[in-house]
Amino acid sequence: MHDRAIAAIGKWQLKKLREQNLEKVDMYIQNMFPGQDYQVLVLIFEINENSCIYKGIDIEKVTSERTEFRKYAYRKGSSRGGDITFTTKLSKPQKKENEKTSIEKKIETVKNNTFKNLLIFKNDYPEEGRIFEMVRDCIKDNETKIKDDLNDVFESFDNQQAQSTGLTFKIKEKGIDKYLRDYEIIKKLILSVGESTKYTHVGIKSKAKSRICSVTGKQEPEIFGFAAPFKYSTADKPGFLSGFFNLKNNWKNYPISPDEAFNLELGGRFIKEHLKGYFYVSEYLIVPHPILKTDIGQLGKIINLLKSAFDEERKARNEKRKRAEDRVQKLIAQEKNYFNLDMLFFTEDKKTGSISIHMMIEEILPSRFRTLFIDVPEIINQRTLFKNAIQYNKELSDLKFSFQLVKDFFGDDFLDMVHKLFTGKKISEDYVFEHIIKTIRKNYIERKTTENFVEYTDLTVKKAIMLLTYLQYLTIINYNKNYTYMEAETNEKKEGRFDAEGFNEFILSNNNFLDSDIKVGIFAVGVLVRFLFDIQSQSLGTKHPPFENKLRGYKINPELLMNAYTEALDKIQKYQKNFYVYTDLRNIINRYFIPNSNQLSQMTNNELSFYFVAGLELGKQFKNERISETNE
Image 1 (cartoon, rainbow, N blue to C red):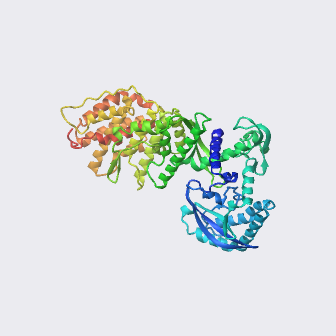
Image 2: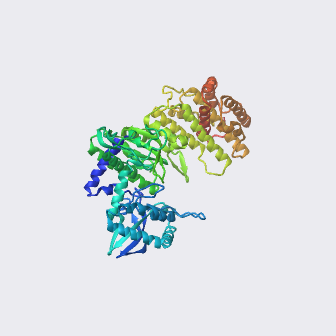
Image 3: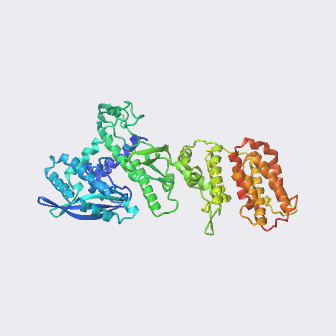
């Protein structure tokens, strides 16, 4: 990920903050729960001459649109030492026997660590130091009551509230309410820690003089070694250091000047607060770049555009609106190519704030978003096959492409597929068919062995065809564009059970999917077996026809397919007591399947299985329902 772009966002943010007449400390203060509404439990202390009185608890609301969070002076600390000031996050109390609750742990950390760190600066601010010493003593004297009060309030919260609650202090002095940010000693602590974290890690300092900054590309008077905008590397683990385990030399890996370290913090924080979302469950963030790197005006336009998009996505998600997943991508798709984007998919350790990178795609233009999310989906959504393909509560709706299809079929490989789609890298058809038929088999087995709701296989097949079509239009996979299907002749003298005209029309309108004679032949055999299924179900009154067991859970190979065809045809003739049953369908099989059966060994079993299952599941649409089974 380009740190220069992150630093540029930081400079833009710094300019905006200075226009609001904010101090430097305000730029180090963090929002506990960025992008969402939350509540803060406020411990109230009253100072009277030489005494401090605990007055109880207030609950204050913080909205995502406002900046009142700064008064709480929150800054995240370490998992061991606690947060930097007295403001901290809470979590639901534990119920395990003999285990301290979250609130008990937080109060002990404040009592033992936070006051100790703060009072280092009491000589600089003696009066404020005296006030916080009084508050510390008051907490010790009222520790049990404070914990009980907090637990009583916190236990009344539901899980959603409990995951978005903070704790802080408010001090009444001479009738005036003061929050932590109102105290100079608190500001001093935040500023000191804010800068020291850029060159100090696990107690070791990494600094250098007169070195080249990796952001500016220029020699700077001083260089820091731990100024990464995100904790996506661990400096004390092997593989990250040119100086091996000598942390003092970490500046060689990541040389950043003090000014750029500050810009990186602002830029990184803005991105995490405003340019972060979820793409089909996978968390990601975006870093924008103007095409002209020096165009700050365009950068501001881009940032505001993206921020609005992510705000709308969060709102849609909270309201559980459909199509919330790709709102950001579709908005980007509407822009011209005056910028590009990096997308980073990650998981974050909520305790340490460090992120594990799963995938990163760099320098994506809006035109690529337009191709992926608008242009190609609009084309394939118009296919007749996908019209009225979904039935819910007896209502029909069209099947429309979304990346959920990619997620459904590729599961754990979803992000790998996303990377290939954005970068346009080729993949093998074998890889695609492997995942498609694996999904079909899984659903098939679950439908037969459980009472759970499972998607009907014909819909899964249509989704698979839509996915294949999408990949073909993007030229991610190949297909035979020059294939010409020669319509099979039909028996014009007699209308039969098989709709040959409808079959021919289907093949012609899906020639990207059925792009060879052997695929048409396999598909036709699947249709024939479907007809046998229907005959057996009707004759025997069973939901699962006996012939279904011969298909081995859709694990089809060439030998099994040939046997399935001959046995299915034999059983149909016996059921119908007619040797010439389904003449038109058999003509198609004799023309496309039998003479090309030597090609079956050239196909993978997964591909062969899919084309057979596609015919089996879609075959019902090629039946003339008004014609009786014996009228052939």
